[in-house]
Image (cartoon, rainbow, N blue to C red; front, top):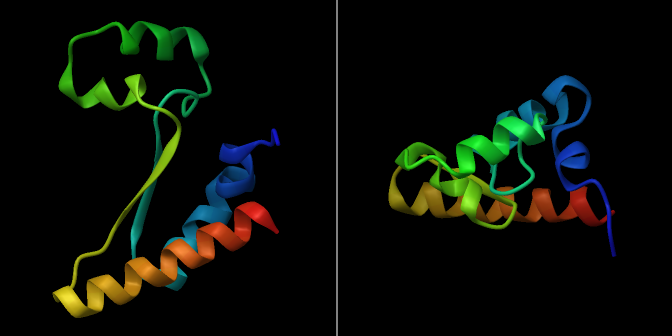
Length: 90
């Protein structure tokens, strides 16, 4: 199945991702190959040796981060994973 992963998750001007981050009290970033709009720039950065662009060598993915006590962070991450799955596959 092929669909617009980035567009579906981000929404118009990133509004869906922002809302999802607020609801789940987490930070999220879409990373990996295909995460940038400018494909030429992405290719140039992928070939660079800068560590901050290493994620461009990986498959497209979402990084979810929660800053809280371990139990609270675990609960937030679990909730965020559920919400991301629902938005992508419904």
